[in-house]
Length: 190
Image (cartoon, rainbow, N blue to C red; front, side, top):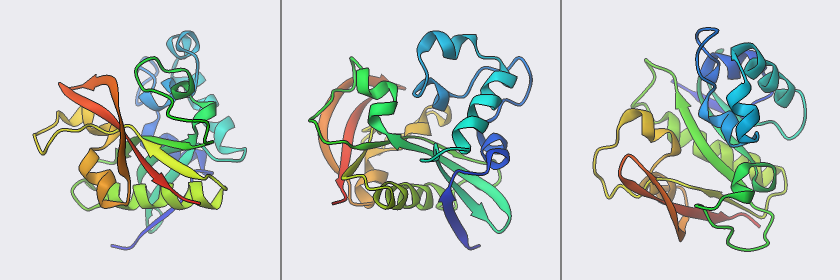
């Protein structure tokens, strides 16, 4: 298996990974961090797909996709923090005026889990942010201390994952998922 991670400019690949599986399905969490809450609540599957297509058509792309040959197998949302709801968050603090990027959501396709895809995605997100001129990138992972995490809550990653990729624990947050605190993990790029 040779995994290649590229900017998410292929909307069909992104929709394969995070698109709604039925017309009545809820919108992926990733969208909720880029759009106002009201707009996110009002989106149906077709509207969400249109938003994703529009994001993939402009620079910077909305994140990165991991490919195994010609098959998309993983997704990570990565974008300038100023263009996300993290810029206004009351529970995840704004540390300083540095124009950081955020990486906040990982998705690995069934059948491809436990193969290191999240590691490839995080490395790819770091490269994507650095190549786009970001001075730093930060994530908001769970500090689970090695405890088991409910699969649906693992989309933010763990502090241990981020630390393995050169991030440091930069601050605490008021956010909690699955009973575990989320922290700010940051990696300086320039």
